[in-house]
Length: 539
Ligand code: AMP
Image (cartoon, rainbow, N blue to C red; front, side, top):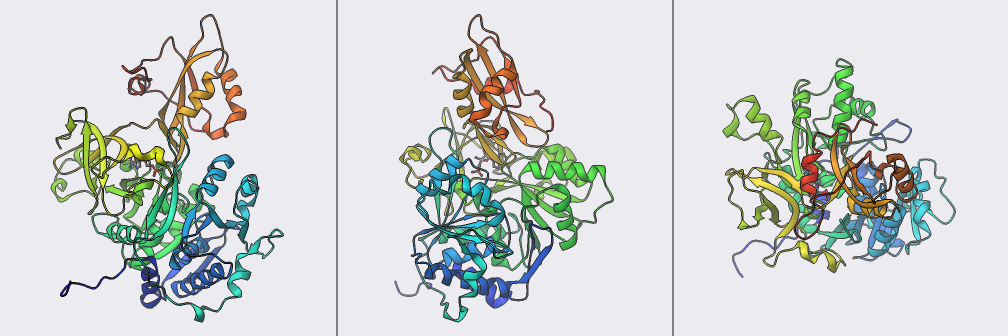
């Protein structure tokens, strides 16, 4: 139609081009495996990302094909974040914390063609390498020594001339990246992000009432680049031209505090576990670090405890809660204090900041209870449903996930919430039976099935209980078969060979019976209520 706007495609290469033209002098800093600091400019970054694009094309990767990464947060991972989607291929970030069996399934389901691996992660990679279809491996190393049959990242880049790079034009609805989410049952499910979703998400996330990110910021994503694209921060930060700092494999409290201080970080982001560790260090050593006053610490992935938000305020550090999901690129809501609460009591302010906040522009919310859509009265509970331009419309290759989408095109989050008249979302419970420990999922169903395979166990339910470091940890509630006796140690030993150590329940409680719903399912809400004061210690 005449008289309308240009049909400009919202693609990731447009972010790269702007970074090159406008922010060439800005810095990107990385903490290397040996703890030294690597520093270069956006100009270096763009030049190397272009060379990586050319190298991948030379290896025969076609638009639409997947290139996976198995890496920590660092500048070369950022190069991959841009180089892969820039020529229409799909960035698939493999989560290094998953089990080899899951990684095998995920790499094959995604049909990964090439995998880029950190040299220090090769021992983990070896555990599933021979079971996957991909046969082209690129290793990121600092010494150029890579195993036979694998390519060295730096050698590949050195062979390219960036002058042959041309910014491509393509449809914004093409896939740019993919991540997998864990499910309560069945296999992990893939989420494919379009270029349009990533670009709109970056613009939405940068807004003042969302992450409030701009060129003057220095951003350090602690949230892994292998989990929900580090909440989109690599794209958002590059779009606005912020200075970027990547922590590499060093996620302990002292290393992160050193990074914050040295680079004068103004915004960082991660799961509660990270911030719970850091506050303990700050409280024990209040004068050790000189941090930027009002540094914003975005916390999400699990609920931020109100006490933690209060404790950080004492150090002039501002925890801001965000809620999101892998299926949502991932940002949904954010809890920046609204003007209406400016003169409210401290308790009211903290209560708001401990909520999940209000939806970002373009994210529509509603919640459904037993009687249909719930009123926004802050009291009635329902399952949160969302829709918007950066929310998945279906899962990749996974018909079993179809029930997560409503007939009228909304995504069912599985989170049970209340919503108040200002659109403030407060998560009350999770309908999914997953436990989120240190930002990573543990399936209660898998643990229950394994426990119930024990000859002395009649029934077992696993719920999450609060943990001061990991936010959530599994507690197993077990009913023994009549006349049997068993110890918690005995059951743990039984589980040991089947699970990674961090999946094992922190405690096992023996009861006479487990409450059930009308349809015979374990009534986990009742169990969670019964064990809500249950204490598991720091380990
Ligand atoms: P993931 O896809 O791994 O990012 O997990 C998404 C899920 O994490 C959500 O459905 C919530 O259950 C949980 N979650 C994320 N952010 C928060 C938050 N701020 N508070 C409570 N739960 C959260």
